[in-house]
Image (tube, rainbow, N blue to C red; front, side):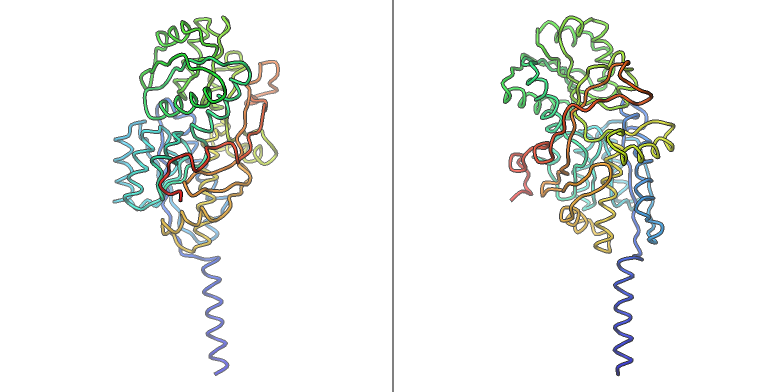
Length: 400
């Protein structure tokens, strides 16, 4: 009898050990983003590289997990993003979709993910509505959002004397949200919004819009756009001599790849808010050098860092649970504190908002830069507890 009890106990211990160290886990990750258009540099193949690095660093293969990555180009179009998401979920067995820049596309994927009860880890899209009016129990918004950008750059510009604003806004969900959130911060900080103009997305010729902004006399022209649109807006503003005449440009969403494309001569002095920079510390430098070695020498954007970080936390939740049940995984991701070398310590709130520090940077002058990709100087750290919109103010149905 004692032998029988000993064998039962041994089997039980082996079962627990198997759950902890040798789960039979199958995961299919769908990286959806812009792979051919104006956001391809700041997301694109780099997000696939970041996803692979998350797999390697979590040692999914060593744990016996079967993890597969697929990728697709949504071309910044919500209808294409919706079609890809439905196909992935219904036919291809995708468990989790990551990245998805372009807020209109992300909001579409957000809804489908909820219908299909899968998991959506947003790194690329910015609209704060993803954790507000359109929050979902299946979605976690990881890297940044329009409220955090506005709270960082908008507040800093007003406090530095830029108290009158005119917005140049991409005419889709992201641009509208960024203008809305920044205008609210400007006015709450004592500034005034003199007007706004919306340009097609994507845009090419910004001359008429910039002339309207120039004519407004506003001290600050807020660029509520991103990627190629921001690059072209800044270049054409320089051609018109707008900044030379005394008006300031506020790049409300600027990525390191944008600065690389502009060059320091043109981009110097730009102030922006980001959640990650490759040269922040030894850990970010080491990871970024590994990333660059796998991505044609290009340093990662904060979106790439967010893909990596969000998947690490997703894997931790699955390991803790021993299964990939979507509802349970998202709940576990909210229960476990977040911690990694790129974003430090944080948490995922009930509304799906990932909380961590944000940083205010200024672009260096050519003389200040010491080499390739040495673009930013740190102006200010924004603590995690003030970087993002208070949960009770977002209008999310998940917040009790």
